[in-house]
Length: 334
Image (tube, rainbow, N blue to C red; front, top):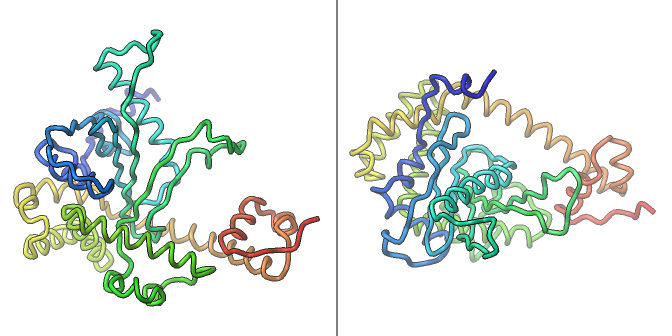
């Protein structure tokens, strides 16, 4: 089937995130979030140039937000699933962005004079239900079939997990790290706990600094909570929007764009995709936990990574990864 046939009659939707951060009328929101992410203090929205390529589509949804500010080219992608392939997607998208930039400025990439490009910043804002590290960096090199440690061919995406696990525990977290983790899985050592707390505090700080981002997440979290209680996606979205209006959350925005927001949210939280996705993720996560538990048990029993890999037919790098994460030392394979 030809590409032209694939695209016939597709109606592509914006995301809620794009409505809030991807329009000229809401450039103040972009500036606020940029300042929160980069600890900066830009105030003049005229300095910010929205640069999103409108016709780059991923799964019937437009890509999110790209813009230029102070010679940085930023790309923000909002994701509701934990996707390890964001670096390769970002690399491909930035290629199109730089191509647009070069074309608009009529640069000659074949000449003897070096052209100068805005520095890339690639951020993924993950708001899914599946638990994840507060902040992590994904690397293109992790996808290479043949490992490459040279760093010569790299592209990264910084992922922020915007959900708060235990908001009420943060005030006490700096005094007693254990309180924040009373309902969380145990970590190998206190350094892991401290690292996790620092990441959680950064997310809390990010949401506190950018009010619109925080209220966006409150709306998303309310929709998700209501979806866990009903199969009626339309009712869940409408109820969440009404409750946010009542509580003054995104009130001005929701009042002005209520019908569009309802349409967009219903599309994003499509019932069938949501339910089937959660079931599939649950099965996959269960199998992964079972495999990790087996490896961990054998490591604690003194088996070497190589022997575990051979006996269980599990990739050696996976076994060594579990060993490293858990801070375990095993007998030498030699």
